[in-house]
Length: 191
Length: 63
Image (cartoon, rainbow over all chains, first blue to last red; front, side, top):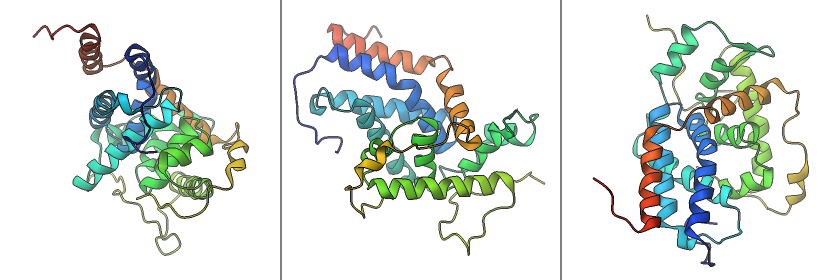
């Protein structure tokens, strides 16, 4: 499925608008997890909403609106990422919380540590963790959104979980052991 | 970038459990998600939705 591909079926603009409104919180959460920056994430979501509204005639009513929207947002993210290689990097707000704030421990894991560790993962692992682990989409839906096989999704999820756990629990991953090098710089205390 | 290798023939895998409910990493990811979802919608979004509603109503923007 592409942004333009689903062929027109009659639908109501009001219904489309209502679906758009309903999915905004999930889109914001996904975008923030992807880029680690609140303002940038919200800008991306608004751009995705504008694109979706402009392309609403090509959305096939009754098809998977959530997958369609996530795909538009994801495509926009990668387009922006290609234009700005440093986009997924340092976020002073995240760093501030990670380095200064008292740890918010839940079930043995610090949520801020998880956020910071996510930003160190390769984007394809980060997005599958966010889609499945955070947003609760199915393997099948994630495969549709990411344009790959379900087996690939499962593999990325498994590797992402291992990498995330390693980043949270201990020293940075050994690049020799894991060919998927983190794309973002490691958060360290400024000296 | 996403690779498109592999087959989609294993669609049945979609029904398998994705993250165990007691998985601490999964729980932390859900909390991250829930925290953002619980935030009030910023004004920028309300303005954008207002523009969409004006288009639905067929009225011009007020500014």
